[in-house]
Image 1 (cartoon, rainbow, N blue to C red):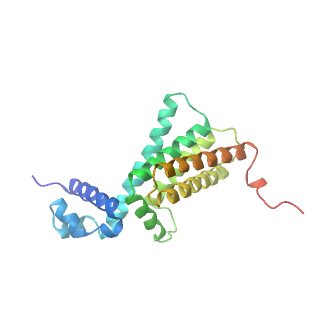
Image 2: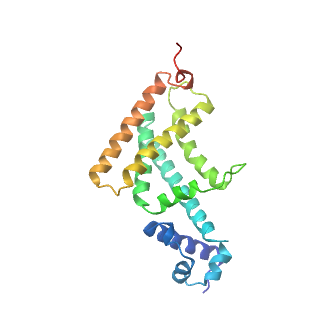
Length: 213
């Protein structure tokens, strides 16, 4: 029985994600996808305009999966009655670390894809998914006793994301061993702890400017 368009699209994306995860974006070939999916190369391009469209769709799935992992981590802590901001932020960081470990090829390829994306006048569906990740962090910060308005909280969430992201991705870039993974966890824990203490002490942008002479 022939697969319908939606089923075929899902099959193509699953194959494409595996190819990228195993060998990076250079491993993404229309002919390989077609052979593994049991369809023609033309059918691949009927579903997606080009290979970049395939990669973009794979990335959307990855971002959805990462958002779901973060939401699940928060739901688990809520179920256990844990509202401490530090523990919740560390749980989010842990979810991100596990995600990066589980996607050694596809996640770096997504980051490279982001760097070459054109600047858009308005956010698109792809950008909206990134914003949802920041919103999870901002929601955790909203539960803390910090003097943050909505805009400052948004920037703080992006700052924390960028900092954790830098530690994690640089640590795993060299295919680190378990000892290095432990070091990454310690760095993230230190970062989150210092970040929260700074916010508790009023470390907002009003305090971050140059000191008066």
